[in-house]
Image 1: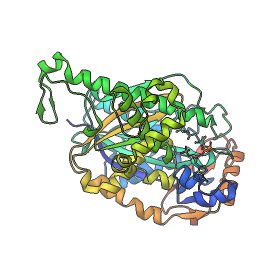
Image 2 (image 1 turned 90 degrees about the vertical axis):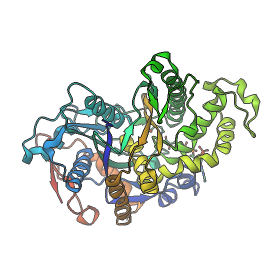
Image 3 (image 1 turned 120 degrees about the vertical axis):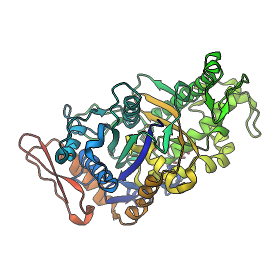
Length: 461
Ligand code: ACO
């Protein structure tokens, strides 16, 4: 049935702060955020925006643009780490968009674990499509997040936005089917978490989060290669006469290598992390396959994988030798993160949107290796294939540039004031957030009020 991603819609606030301005304001060495983290601009929410309003905007715009009948949706899953309520899901807020249709038979709730929620939501949606419970309707996956940090080194790695995706049969972008194409790594760790109920700021150990992210890549990529080889080389599969890439299975050993994928895209908290990720993939191949690479000191092989995750010599050596392939296979997916910052659960799918913006029709037939990471840790690596031209997604993604061009640049002073106000008012009841129509998109949903009972009321601009 080729279940997969049929269409995508990205929404981000109208305001942004420039990373270059922020460098000056934060009094850090010039270039630290723009060259060091590879970030250009950062989206952030106004006081009258939250994860619900962002999600409403992404989903509502998707419905309007595609004229998708809400009655044709049987599952709606949300991925987030920016919940505004410990009980009521964001999904239930989105049900207001079904009211006119009278369709209340819509499965799914929120998926929560740091930046992994949208991937969990996508897997849930696809599992439903492949299950006996599937009723022939579409699923929709919405990622929605606000990434804001307290003052300090993590602040420039913030961001904000929501993505809504239609999932269903005969999709242009499909997940390669079967256990040979997905590997995961889950563990109990404390790199990034949100224990303060009255704050939107996470507790984060930045350096540890980078090391654990690389550890998750090591496990997922090694696991992915093992699973691929196992699934593609077992006698059992030979008997089933499975077809791979239109070529009948042979008894010859078949291993995964990077030439089998056109692009690799990664969860991107900031784009320098993606550079580190690709270098790590290259390191893994060199280590696992006993490759000899010019410029790589064979002495490094004496170190165990886990010892090299914080080793700058190893990182620099592999960044160096992977520069060209990074340009070809990875860099094209950086655009949305550079412009909007970390979308948390939406980050990986923002990277996919960036790739579609860059490739347009040329993305047809391409394969994309995906790595999803959520602190804590939840992570997966899987493979997408663009089976046919994603015409609607291309149209939607191409329009994003117009939105980016029409944003309002805000000073770091005003940005800081807005984040301070958010923290101060977060738990207030009887609260009417301030707002200025100049800084809101026309027709956008916004938080009008938190009433005396703590109920959040949304309206359209
Ligand atoms: N010009 C150019 N580059 C510079 C300059 C300069 N003037 N100054 C510093 N740099 C470079 C550094 O060399 C470094 O690059 P490198 O890693 O390629 O060497 C980069 O800028 C960042 O500098 P650091 O000193 O490492 O930055 P710092 O430690 O202050 O903060 C960090 C970085 C830890 C990522 C912080 O922003 C953070 O905690 N972010 C949140 C955590 C996070 O996003 N983790 C990622 C995975 S978890 C998740 O997705 C939320």
